[in-house]
Length: 226
Image (tube, rainbow, N blue to C red; front, side):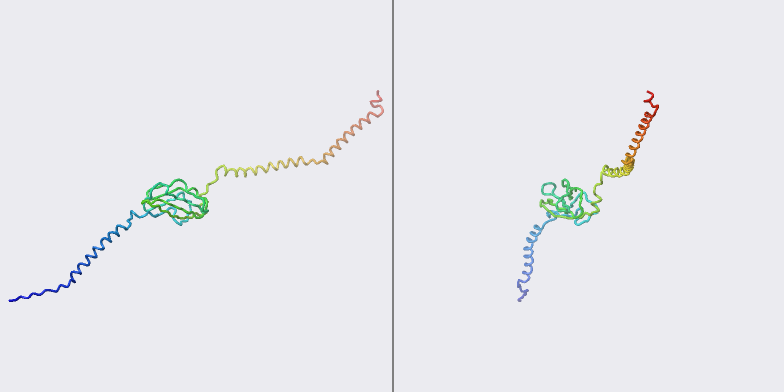
């Protein structure tokens, strides 16, 4: 007795369908690993400015005493590569005062009194935590009212001087009046009056002399008795 067995034909289609995905995965795996290796991690990214005081573009009603810049990572402290320069509205006068202060992610510098109203520019350059320098600029505006409110008050001696001068003026007026009265009294005797007085005095003296002469010339006067 003869037994006949049958099987499905093998055309290679099933085998190829299994091999292709494996080959593609094997090719893509190195590429994915290289992409992950080249992608920058947050720790390797450059530092960026996240906040500032004054804020960029802010208009201030009070004069600031310092500038504070805040970064996402702590910049490298010290060195000649870091600087913060605050320029006034005239574009020439600078107002930063003292050395930079590093406090974690903050970099600050003090300011001299801002004596002009207008737009100020903050230019900064710091060394990122990964060693790369970063720089940028910000602006803020100070109002005239803020500058006037921050202006130094006059010293006590200066403020008292005008008051004493004002108090002296009324006291001087009676003195001037007294001088004028004295001058008026002295000037009240005119030259004509003086001449009249002199004439009267001379006439009186002449009359006395005339009387004496007549008395001596009368009979029985002093000359005859001799």
